[in-house]
Image (cartoon, rainbow, N blue to C red; front, side):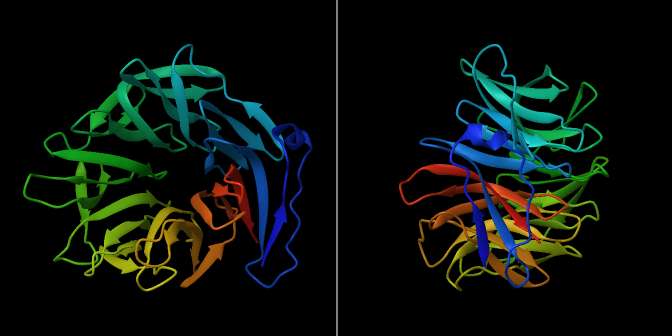
Amino acid sequence: MIRRIALAAIVALVVAYVPQPAAAEPPGITLVDLGAADYKITAVDVNDRGQILVYTYPGGFLWEHGVVTPIEPPPVGYWSPRAINNQGHIVGWCYVGTATHALLWEDGVTTDLGLDGFPMDINDGGQVVGYTAGGSPRAFLWEDGETTYLAPDWVSSYALGINPRGQVVGYGQPDSTSTTTAFVWQNGGFTYLAPLSDVVGQGSAAAINAAGLVVGSSLDATYYRRAVMWQDGSAIDLGALEPTGNSFARAVNDRGQIVGYGAPGQGGYHQHALLWEAGALTELDGFANDAEALAINNRGWVVGRSRDVDGRNHAVLWIVM
């Protein structure tokens, strides 16, 4: 059962919100509407302080316990915030003409990282990972003004997540004869993560928690994309809403709770927000039948997006008790 708290407009969010336990059996989930838009709006990340990073075209804002704070945009260009750490530091990018500028927001100051690319994550140590723009993307690690390319000789590579220990996860194509490979990178060394099917191949690591638990997706032997976690280097299928459905794991917290989304049935169009916990799969109800869960903090706060019956997009928060 999901308890909904609908907030009609952004201005209404200035009233402090104190979450109440849902009147339901475990897990007990409360749904909070963070704002709606006719075009794009998505809650893309949440830190352990309860700061929620919301992207809304052409910019974004922070939602913190009911209070909305606009993120100061760069001087020019369309821009997109992507991730926030526990210090409240934010990474994202902006477009200026045909160039993509990787940006870091710290305490009201915007820093251009000097990269034509897309920062995807930042840890509490200020390490930033992402990938370059262009036809042959290259995974990078940015730290204290220095950029390291993780796989400079690969055909393509993407870094999507980093944990407090500096372990980086992502995927790429090592050479022209190989399939897409999921990896963990640390201190210059790669650990390759096996796909669900050695015949089909193709895996993508999306996130890693402090203990080193990695989640993402992989094609199975029947060519369905399935949410997976990797344990001792082997991919474990987390399941989907239906045997013939696709699913994607996007984030994992230090409690081992995993979130993502999936579509039931072959060729299903509408996505459903999903939570995997202790071997059980729970659908996180949205406003209609189209929702995605994109991030989760260590308090069990899940953020993402949902579309209502009128087609409007909402940034949403699910609080898992």
